[in-house]
Length: 351
Picture (cartoon, rainbow, N blue to C red):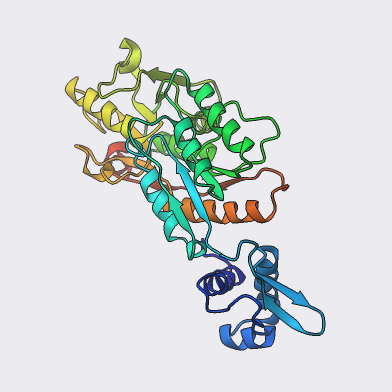
């Protein structure tokens, strides 16, 4: 979905202010001048300028005009931390981070990526605190026996330091009390609903949901969507994470699988093919993410595409809003997702 016109104008003007085109204390162009420049209505320009005032970039003085505001510390650049423990193993986070860095609102700001294999998430939080970042983007830990405690430590330390948090993809299962942190994700329940409906349309009659044990709260939303379509509890199979997929004996009874991620779907495909089951003739598979290799699997994978760039851009907007309005209630921004149809679901077989 295209960004509204007033939002596009806001993006352009905020970039120009942050880049120094308009200096602190300088008179800002009038609304009439901006109407002529952008060739839009006065109402559209007024909404953009209102957003600039809300962000603290300009200030209006009655009878005088609008002026660019001097930042409190004399510099406009903000630095944001990234705490993403799964950065190297979960393929969606790199393009999400690129979306944050490349967002229109990112001009003049910087990202701190404090990641090494040896450091734990709590240590990464301490690095962000030591560097006095303006806020942190955090993807809570999953598939770890101590995930709840690890996430609690990270959130507690950042909260104590007064740093705003924007969660990426999921919230921790046990959020801190009075947590005003925002979340940006896809609508996971709709994703599960969309994928399950498609499997049924493709002829699957006995569909299971397959996930790794200990996966994040986002997967719970996908399961809810799956169950919503089936009208009953469904069959949820969990397997220990790893490079080999351990399936229970009764898994062979299913003719359709909705997988919690493309990675799980790829391992399932390898396991089923090794057992002599043909895809999609014997069993149909749908994943979630649409990672780079999804179309390159032995049977190209039907999947739910996550709009990673848009997730990153939205996360940055939420962060800037949170910094400007720290007492706002927490917000969950759930973006739309798209079904990408390939051979693994057997769509071609049903016409």
